[in-house]
Length: 340
Image: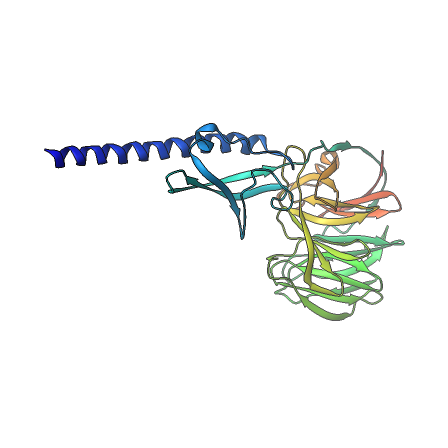
């Protein structure tokens, strides 16, 4: 009889403990789900429910190869946008509970709605699948994609006839490009390498490998010190211009209510990064110091004149003085707009 009573007590204790663990994790999950939609800002404290904290001896958060016991959204630990983390709870009885979660971090200040006015348009060859787009003087330098038709070329603004065109081999899908002094750097999509050309005749000088963390090449620009690369995620990487295989630093991009993935063609102008977002008729103005979106252009009115499928989208930013040039994949126009 005593053995039966002992077994009953143990079974009850085990059941109570399991139910308590479920209660703790369910409460934490409800909190995380609510905050995932609402988001945090840097400096915010994670106000975990008492059901969790009262039963915990310690709580830590692990993220990749990092771990912290501080329940504060610290920019040294978190990035803007989504952060896939694990909560590690050490209970007062020494047992451990874990739960995966997503912590979204948004910019503190709302991004400005930037307006513009079209002041001129220029012809653009609709066969060009624009991936990289920049201007120097009156010369457009353009990188065009698609396997079998990828190339780097330059032409005078107002014409569509290339002054020089260097084709790629059929296995190459060209992506973003940037002018650096007397050279032009060009990315490839999935080939894990880029090219460096003489700016004068677009003859190939050399190739370079991507850093291992970068899986794909999308957009490219230059800030006077570093190459700036997007890889189709929320991240923007700053590369050593003398050795583009080395990452100097990176930022993640988010606005005040939204994280932005699929950052594409890039342009650097007057201290800010401008970025297309793949398949969206918007251009973001980004603070390069921290990744915060400080402004956003809505180019829906222009894009709907040209976009008939998922490929022929807005994708081309350059600055002609302080006026912006915009175009897209397979568009027949380049638009010059004055920013109001």
